[in-house]
Image 1 (spheres, helix red, strand yellow):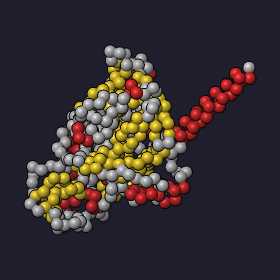
Image 2: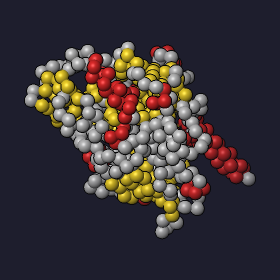
Image 3: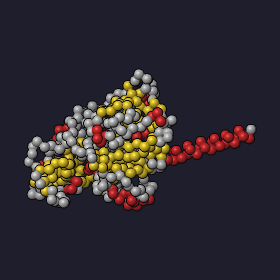
Length: 444
């Protein structure tokens, strides 16, 4: 009898010990290093719809999955819901997760409420495969796709352990950018959908900060407000409310981080546009989304034309415009300049400010242009405006890409439905938080 009581006491002690630390790990903020990967720039196919699209830069984070843990690298995408991993190693996708090596891996049957109820916001409805498992097909606007089964497994993020995380274990995939995708194991969906990574973790907020110098950065999962190192140096955030719609509209992505864009200023000149130019129409087309999975920023045609005209006017005596009507960078950016290769730095250029309700994001002049890799005209490099015409891509939305989020602390407050902004030196963030950043820009 004594041995049985001792056994029960030890059992309950260890049960509550592991339960306590598992819950505590999820309630505390987790800080992870970000890194960026770059591959050669190519033409971007025109997407068939307005949904999220990806370009030649991706933000990645490293973590482990399964029992025993396997190392994976995932692209952070605030424009997607379902996180997924390659589960079938091929020459095109050499990095993969092996579910047969994980004792905690559990496929999700198609009769499960997870499959029947929580996949409703997927662009392509989940289906039932021959083995009665929940099957997902994901299609992106750059013509890439992946498909496989939904499953659950334990994810280890920083010091946190998250059992039962639902993700896609993808058996097949096609890519419009295989060189980039070969460097990662999968994608981390971070939007407002019920199956996104951040929704499943249940954190009230998350933040990231992308360096403008070496493309390293920080991903903070949870509320870092209690961190003395963070609160002591981070400037007060300016908040802009998220736009949330309860009704479904054909061209409005309800799971996206949508904000009110009210105007654009070039230096001190506000573009002469009516407020209606920035508002979604009755179909939902024209929403403004903050998307970490997109590199540059894309504006609807009339707004892009006004920005292009004013920026060209203010740089007329400073830079030589590229006179080549056939050259359109990434299929959407047609304002480009010739800059002498002998010139180490760009001249002083006008800043561009995105004016949101309650907050502003100011892009300095040197970040308003981007040197196009591999493009040389005589003795000149080609630099293009980092704002594109969404109409040329068939995208019926304003998309704020992560190039313009560099050196901005981006806080996504899910509890209060708002996004906070603060301009900061993101290359110093890791030092201030006591986290050494090893992530560097990798050039293909």
